Amino acid sequence: MRIIRTFILFICICLPVPASAINVREHILDNGLKLLVLEDHKAPTATFQVWYRVGSRDEQIGKTGLSHLLEHLMFKGTKENGPKTFSQTIQRAGGTDNAFTTHEHTGYFELISSDRISIPLRLEADRMQNLVLTPDGVLSERDVVMEERRLRYDDNPQNLLHEEVSATAFTNHPYRWPVIGWMSDLKTLNPADLIAHYRTYYAPNNAVVIVVGDVDPEAVLTQVRETFGKIPRGPEIKENSITEDMQHGEKRIFVKKEAELPGVIMAFKTPSLKHEDTYALEVLGSILSGGKSSRLHNALVYEKQLALSAWASYENMYRDPYLFLVGGTAAQGREISEVEKALQLEIEKIKNAPPSEYEVKKAKNQIEASFVMEQDSIYMLAKLIGTFEMLGGWQLINTYLEGVRSVTPSDVQRVAKKYLIPETGTTGILVPLRSAKK
Image 1 (cartoon, one colour):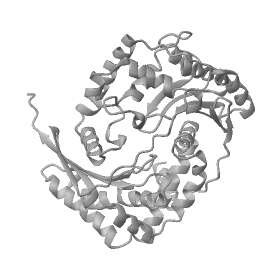
Image 2: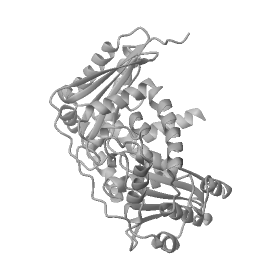
Image 3: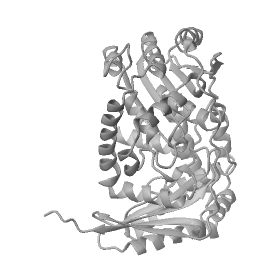
Image 4: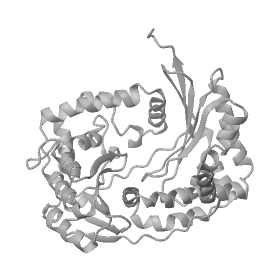
């Protein structure tokens, strides 16, 4: 059985995976709410999702973390449905629910039997406009988020390094602060700012409802009109357009923290999803870090045994230019300077000579296989639709693989030379400190 699974995985990586265009039904209500519905009758289930066009990029200096904190508070109840009622109602109906916040958007989702889709529909419409927010409630949940931040960043050396690298790489763009917010901002948070954030951004004209699964699109449209259609438009929101200033020289930082081993992250500014170079950068990332046969793992972990891990990641799911990251963790007894030099060497190799046709084909097939197989899950398919919609329109899904398939070895070499430039990059080094605990 293991041999069969391995063979299937090999076929998925080495051969193109056929993909068909998705046929999303789109409607815009009179109050500005956009509805996207995709039928999928493989199983009697459906996912109901509400995406708001607001994330940490829409916050201001001194008020970071509002979007993520509001995500927490959305589960604290309305006048009609008290605290914990939302999740308990979904669970009693046999479903699950959760939420997420990014730099760009905030999303809420339920996965439930398709014949019970009216339940999350009614609950989401209620909390879009009727959330109960009090100063004491806001501050109480703020304390929960502060503890989450301690665990996720302050007590995690690798995450802290990533956070510091991002903060250093950007000068004037909101991408420089973390989605969870700075601890100093959370400590001094004014509940009135959080309430104003909700009143401004949580409105039908700033939201997208996505339904994927075993549903009738016309029936869904009727129910959405009956519930969400009654909610008045919110204030018109001007798009937050920001351009990062040009970087004049390499930036380097050192993070000293209790840790087992040193680490390094190198960040290079790269364009986002809608740019024509996104496809070649995606392939470059896969060639450098697409599995154990990739260049970085093979050179640093397997051959030279310099690192426990070596990786690259092209972060393209952003509205504005973001980062191409390359990093590694030193093996026991090895210096982080050795790891950094080895990473730089692999980058220079791909700049000096284009990758082989085989490497490019393998990388493209890996990307395509992942992209297509992800759509087997109605939740992930809805999330894919939502992500593309937030960043430029869900229709981009139907042209994305075309772009990937068109990438050539010379394209990969070109983007490596164009963007992976040390003089305009940011390098962060994790320097382990000895623990004071015995």
